[in-house]
Image (tube, rainbow over all chains, first blue to last red; front, side, top):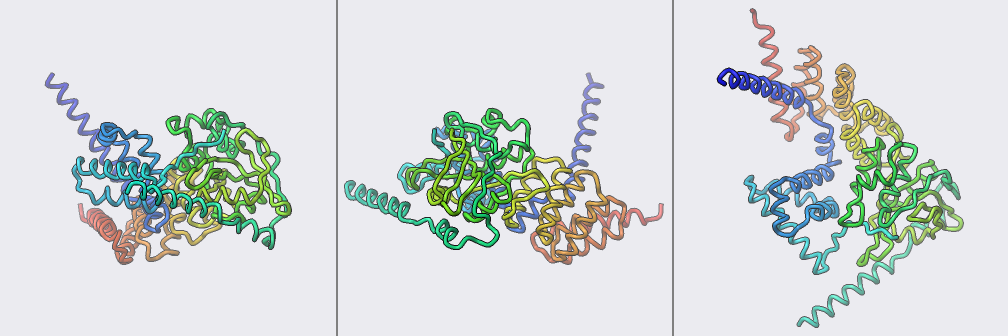
Length: 133
Length: 323
């Protein structure tokens, strides 16, 4: 038992150090997307992906579901937003305190707000392509 | 009180309707009155295949039309699984672009002018267009593929829905297309670019393509894009990064060197050059590049540049120390 634990520890240690090595080797280069973003090109696409990745986080998805917001619908809404609006959402997410509950609160607030303005008819954030038959 | 609110809402709706209906098809008029130089009066890409849509699947069908010949497995059925959202009986615009990428095509947004669409057709590229066939406040979204135009008759030809050759007035197309945000793209194999694509759209398409393509394919896309936009920092850095990812560090260093020479104020160009040179064992050259990265004074990268220089200097000291 004791030897197997020791072996396991060694194995994990090797794996971890290898993983660390891999990331440090990769991290030396600045990625194209980072360069393009600093050039002001793909930042919108990046932010969109970032907001979407937030939505797919398990705790965020669960919180949205609790409040009756469909995940696919929330993502569709992100796609419907203009680049500026997405930048605003991403910025709000970024500047929100790191605690998960705060991020959750921000996301839920944003989507409830959009839902309400949609219902009231102030906005028409329907990206959706209801095509003709 | 409530009745007054409703009256205001109704008024607002009417105004919106008037605004939507009132705009004239200015681009069509201009194109007809003074056809731009070098634009053929009539083009039709008759060989473009046709995939009749089923139910709400106009997105997958239109995507299959522009991907035909580029990808063997880009059938409407397959694409339907990849890009269609059953809950919303539709396909999102970003998914159309991403769907093309997943099938090895580079999808590039076109400038939002009718003339650009016609020029692409003349270059032999079917154009995927997004339309709002309804009104701004009662939208009926639709994807279709533009395959031809006739300036004299002010008509366009489309593969649309279940109609193999839909002839539409150019004015109607302009209205529906502008109402949907003048959104159109062309899907081409890596190495080719739309005739009218602007630098920003090309960079966006190439960077997006890098995400899902093999390094060799991405390198092909970057090299061809650089021929048109040799001064784009993002494209040159992209070329270096994919060459590096492909394991060709010598070529990557060359690309980063060119990026740094053309954009001496770019910290990332010097940083990537320094890292790659260090991995090639060129310690002194790497140190020179890292110092240039720090000297560039780019605040956004200052911290990373300084850390890189420090680590390279530490390595140099280690190796020169007597053993």
